[in-house]
Image (cartoon, rainbow, N blue to C red):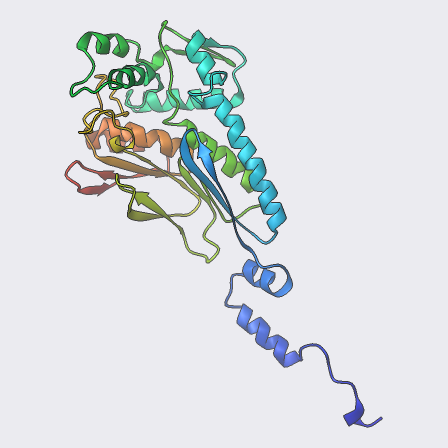
Length: 334
């Protein structure tokens, strides 16, 4: 048979293959492999709420079905943890503890958060204190009717007398509050814990490029482009004031503008456990740390404690950093 009658090659020539491989060498190995030999990876996202805050999860994966099934399982995990930490679900573990003053058979999640709460409370000299819930209840009921001043001094004294993290008695999986009327809010740490639980599960599932934003933010790995993740920080009006870059770490922000009781913002939800009044030493604090639980609680602690105590409190958590915004708008990085 003459050479001209031989059948033409249906596949790429050796030269074409070399060109393809040379072009793909500029891509990250994982992405190049997917593009050449498998489905194209893309982002898959879930949006909802966690403990009353807007929440989202974002995964980079090539299998849409697997990614969506995983997100559904993570959403179920968020719902399970809300049944532990929610103040608004009557049968949550936290609601039962506040109502009864004791909780037997506390879940591992509740025990873990209470243990970490007490540790950070002690490390911060009480600036972080989960027993401030009586103050929240007092301020909320007082400002339910228009008022230009804070709660009456006598009522404030009663609520303030119930604030003391040392009154949390934790023995095994049994929790008891020392004084009748004591109550806890874990909103300053539980969102971080939920974020960590979900992020750890996703890592165990083999997801390498992840952003978990469940009230606080934690990222796994880098952005698929090989750069750090960029997380926007919002100002009181909701606009993006600045961005920070994260790789394998978490961030949390605390500011009095989060929940205000009066139009002036004098009275807000971040109480100083030493006085029973709203803290005003700083305008806002953002903390980055390896885990969201620590970033969450430390952001509250630093906001309450103020700039002069921030370095010593940060030093108790390896890898923690902070951005402090002073009341005059100046920014300090620690």
